[in-house]
Length: 239
Image 1: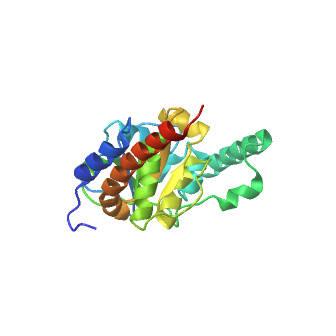
Image 2: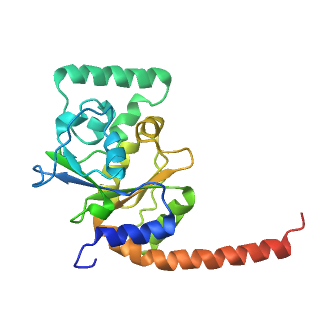
Image 3: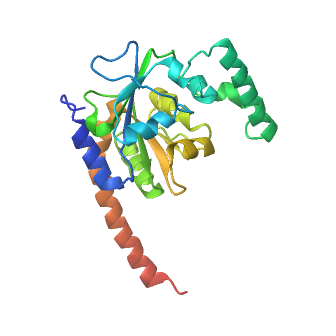
């Protein structure tokens, strides 16, 4: 990776290829609150709600208590809940089990952070002053294809299946394994405003430069392959 981190340049190069409708979000899990960054004030219903705020241009950090409204997000972020909130978690899980949305045996398989962060820094990628842990890209499937192909070319693709619910597990999964794509769950789409034709690709911050460098080749190759396929369709299609 380049010795000099430039989040703005990386963001611009990726956006030029994937044409996202919202800003990429850099997330960093910290052992202490960051100096010179404003802490989050207010209340949000979910951990992924903070993605929306950062995509809108805000830079801030949360502490574990800010995630107490989200039983699922607290679980994937390894945040212990207070006793009264733990009861809410049990009710939430029972609600999901009763709906048939998730099975009890699936819960232990959900990726989680290895330890509880003391603070979580959220910022638009273009404003990130250092290498983040993970970066979230909300893109259309065509953009996700380019990012996945670039990640594989760069040697940081995982070959992992596209993840479903809960969307927030994509963060610890990417941190542990590498590039992860997620379809986005219903809750996430409500809390973040993700449209029906968008999905997520999550990259580790340390992999970004390699992916960006591979993206130019992948994008050019796809343009050439599209022209090739269109020519074959015109020549060979009989209907």
